[in-house]
Image 1 (cartoon, helix red, strand yellow):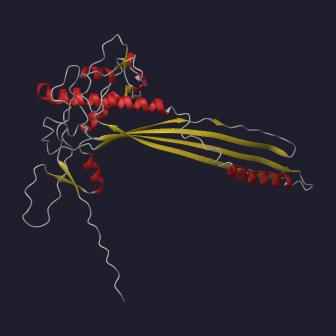
Image 2 (cartoon, rainbow, N blue to C red; image 1 turned 120 degrees about the horizontal axis):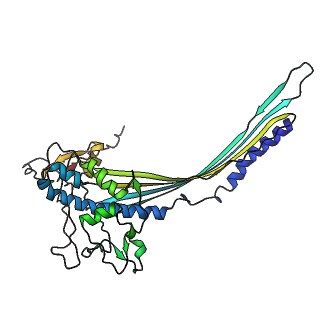
Length: 377
């Protein structure tokens, strides 16, 4: 029996040494098995579709709230008050965990003694090893993004899709046949795209949340909930004092692929009952995708957590004649300049956000602490 125990102990002690010898030779690409490219394009297209639709809903609400009434306009055109001049973010976290486990369980029975006494040894040594690989990439999403072939330094093109004859058609979210007129930018068109009502031109995999595409869910669910306490009959330039503002919206989901192998062997003999060695090998591939969108009040929300955000007026009083001058207040949003004053034929006017929304924000920074040199003794 003790000879067998020594063999098992030596084998288990040698396994870590073998593992250490190849620790750098077995490195793998994190997230292997997760379709990152397909998921990332799907997220990009869902988010840009939502950004386009959100701008049209914002414009429609401000135009229709007096005609339809507040509740009817909000139910139909609720929007998230995003600042077009800021970036959002999309973070991709990929992780792979390789696991190896070995367990040897055995009941070793000693032959009965003449006095009728019996003994059984229960031995169950085990060994486990794990390797973890991670990779994180953060992407910036311009919140003024447009669908279609519009270029940043030129006028916006009045189309949401491209022709299937283009060599770079796989880059775009919506592709139509060359003999069809391209889809024009409008509230009705964007609502149809967000709701998955024109699947024939979709050039990406849709992501569904509670049976709704992500773009539609962001517009109808998240936008309505986040802006219920700030969007009202009052103008965004002069909001009610009761308003509470959404600062930042985050949405995260994970995809996991985990293959594993668990072989076992059982041996029953006269003195061994039973011997059950077990080997477990698994690889856990996880991809986590986190979307972040920023509103006009993201500076205030971020500063409020640290207690350094002050409410600032957009019409400050004249500075005092003496004493330290107050630092200028940073407005919640810079005025959005229109792309063109009068669009040419084939161009479109992009709905723009108001110059600001809500009160201004002034961040208060702590004063530096002076360090005096030690005095001579």
